[in-house]
Image 1 (cartoon, rainbow, N blue to C red):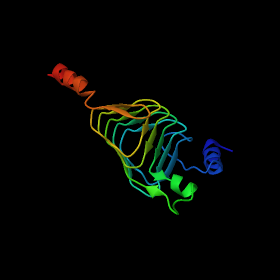
Image 2: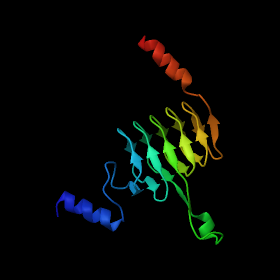
Image 3: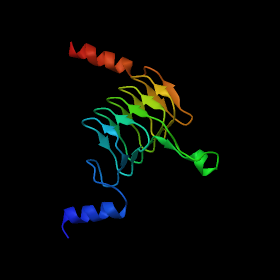
Length: 154
C-alpha cells in the first residue's frame, strides 16, 4: 500500500476527509477558509448548520474546537434540534491551544485568543486580547504594537 492509499484508508477509518492542514484536523460542513491559514492537529472546524468563516493569515493551534452547533438542549431533552449560529474569524487572528470557539462569535482582525479560552456568542473587537473562561476581553490591546510598526516603516 502506498502513502496515498494509506492516507485515504486512514481518513475513512477515522471518519474524516482530506484537508490541507493535518490528517487529524476534522473539517465538517463547508467552512469558508481564507488564504495562508494554519490549523494544528486534533482541531475541529464544524460548519454544519451555520456559516463559519476564517479569514486570511490565521493561526489556529492544536486541540482547538471551532463549533457552530450547540446540542446541549437536545441532550437534556428540552429541544428536538441543535442551535446553530454563525462564527466569523477575521484576518490575522491567532487562537491558542485548547480553545473553544462557539456559535454566535465574531472575532475581529489582529486579535489573539489566549490558550484554553472559551469564546461563546460575543463580538471581540479588532486588535484585542481575549483570555480565559470566563472570557476577559482587553479591547485594543494590540493597537499599540500596530502603531509602533507603522512608525518604524516610515
